[in-house]
Image 1 (cartoon, rainbow, N blue to C red):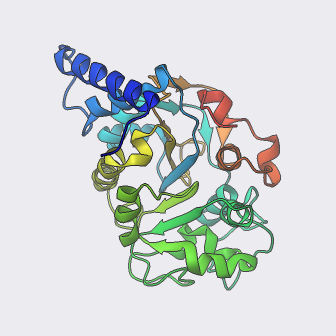
Image 2: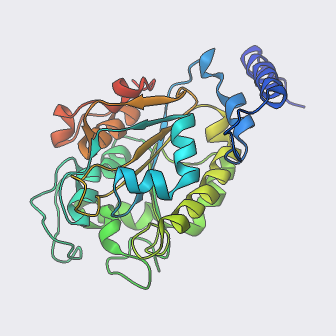
Length: 309
């Protein structure tokens, strides 16, 4: 039988108190159905007492919709946004999709202005994933529908242009090992093995590119239901960020960006942020040097009060 430490007993006791408080409280008149397991999420918010440092970051990228469109069309996601935190002034970098993904992963667009495959854009230098592994941190991407690890061409609903690690040729060996199919995700969640630097790439049917926002919302709900039950979340060390690569070209490229972590409590951040801010957050969580334009980007960690470095 394992003996619990004093800290573990304190966290457990606080979680029980919070759970009891949540179950006894009366919902507001417009409460509606809460996100799955939200009472346990509140119980996990031991950050109020202990503020666990964020040591793992998982980013989920949706497609081609604006802040207003995502707020209206993804009700579960926006309930999480209101419960935890979201930005109202977060902007993608450019159009089309690929340079935005490269900006997130690499800290700059490398001058890319199209959606061509990795064969056309063989990028040198580091990504946030490769930099993490080179410095003894863990990194992984989980790509839905990908036929094999680090697949360099699109197939079915898998779009390689949405899987940025495949473009960094100096990291190809790392990509083949750690750019994973989505089937690996559930096991890593259950085992508490999510990476320090992580990304989830939904396929075209579930990222609101070909499918609807409603379908993307349901897919994200299923994903987060798994995450909320995993030890990385319950420890308080995992933060999840959902954003979109770009808008529909009609709303100034402002997109919904949600930050989910126990330290967040109904935060609405108006500061202007962008994808380089997200690169910077990856680097903050990994405690590594800022890649390229991330160095001068507005800090998401500071803006949201995330405990990182």
